[in-house]
Length: 136
Image (cartoon, rainbow, N blue to C red; front, top):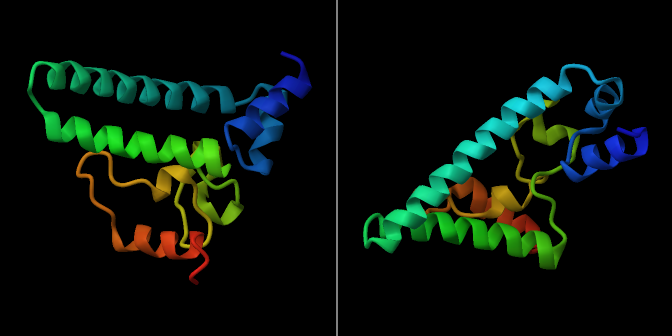
């Protein structure tokens, strides 16, 4: 893969700047990326299973919670240009492991969306919304 395309992939995946060089070098990033892709696949499969269950009239509340999370997340990304997660270094516990921990000042669309399993918003999320809306 050409280096410019790798750098674009890193930016579009919201990879912290200090992690991007490992993409160009083909180092452990790819293993971490593969692990995260596997986790994403499991979540996608879970969503598909919930969709099928809801179509049968089962687990409807769980499906609504997940759908609400995904809807708000994608709307913030598409219409407000909010990144999926914050690229700011303070929002990452371990960039080499792709472990993000948003702060009340550095967050993304995923962090602003209600819990996909309960549909609830935490106090921390409400603080993020206040910052996002310009209240703090």
